[in-house]
Structure formats: C-alpha cells, structure tokens
Length: 279
Image 1 (tube, rainbow, N blue to C red):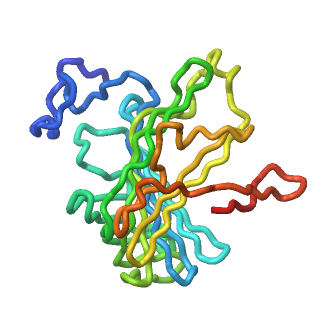
Image 2: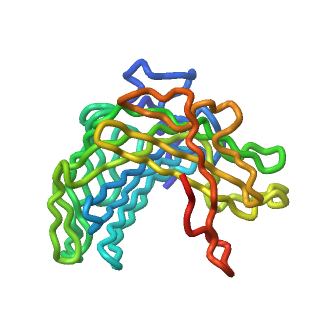
C-alpha cells in the first residue's frame, strides 16, 4: 500500500532541538548522495590477549538503512552477529535487531548491548558500559577522489577508555573489568562508497588497492593515535600535506609539532599482503 507523501513528511523528534545546519528536517540529509553515512565502531579487548570484541552501528540516510554488527574473537574462534533494517525517523534511537547503543553522557559514557538470541543460547551477547578516559580528538579530514569525482569525504574522531560489564559467547562468560580491559572507539560521518552503485566512468579510475593504518595506542597517562593511508603505488593520501599534526595526544604532554614516522613495510615473499610496519 502506498503512503501519500504529505503523511510521511512530518517533523521528527530531533527537530525539537536547535541543531539544524540547513533549512531541512533532521530526517533529511543535506546531501542527496546515496553514499552518505553516519556510523561508529567500538573495540574492547582483554589485556591478556584472550578475547577481542569489535562492534559497530551505521546509518545510511539516503538508502534508508540502519545496520549493526559485532564479532568476538576467542583464540581461533569467531562469534558474529549482524542485523539490518529500514531506517526510522528517530535518529536518537540507536538500535537495530538485538543491538542497542545508548549515549549516557556525550563524549564520555555509552552503553552497548546485544541481546541474546533465544534460538542460539550459546551465541554472542553482551551488556557493557564504555567510558572515555581521555577527551575525544579529531582525526585528519579524509578526502579521496577517483578521477574528478569526490568518492570519499569523512570526518572522524577517536577516543580511548575502559569498559565494564559482561560478554557471553559459546557457553562462556567474560567479566569485563576496568584495568584488565581497554576500549577504543571511532565515530565518523560523511560520504564513502556503498556497495550496489553503478560506477559509470569512475570504474576507469578504480584503485588497485591501498595500505591503511589505524592504530590507537593507549598508555597509562596518555593516548596516541597513528593513522595513515597510501595508494597501491605508495603515494600517501592520508595524512595530507595540510595535516601538520596527524598523531594526536589527548592527554599528558602535548607534542604539537612532532611527527610519528611510519615506514618499512614488510611484505611476505610471493604475496601482496603486508605483514608488518615499523612505527
């Protein structure tokens, strides 16, 4: 059954707040690019190296989709959950399927939950509180073009902290406690390629691949972020020439003019995949 356009075109809850940056409802993205995105990713890992949880949620406003995922690695075994659904009107509702993210205190504390699936009692589930120990910091503004077309433009910030709560998978329960587990997160939005688009002439400029480093390093009294991207031929596209400080400290001594040297790619003989980098 079709829905008349005027019935669907109503204010949404976020329109109550003075956060607009264009004469549009917060339901609509300022760009009509189908590749617009808004998403987050969390890393939670055990200092003993026993377990690593990666979880994320993404909103794609111009395709009308919200999706989320989580994967837990324990030894050589992976547990994974994925969910996807139609995007609703309330952009403050960060939930899809069994996943829920709640912003309890912006830039400081978030709740992460994945409900257990009744049909899979040994599947992955968790209930965690993620707390920032350092202020969130910007990553370099990221742009990329294929030929003359802007295919990627993203704004991101990164933060390090700790987690507390419980993770369950495979009949095992992990007690996540501060001091024994570390959490990092990345929050990003902008435009980046979404599968399914017809590339047109952009296919002529499709890259062979690229090298990507995204390394948050959390110490006792400071947090260091290293990020770099190189094309297949070794040309560095991130950080760009304008990014004077691309390794950012969020706490402790400020090394505003220092550069972290990333060099020495080690490639396994007979393969194209790098095995190590020297920082």
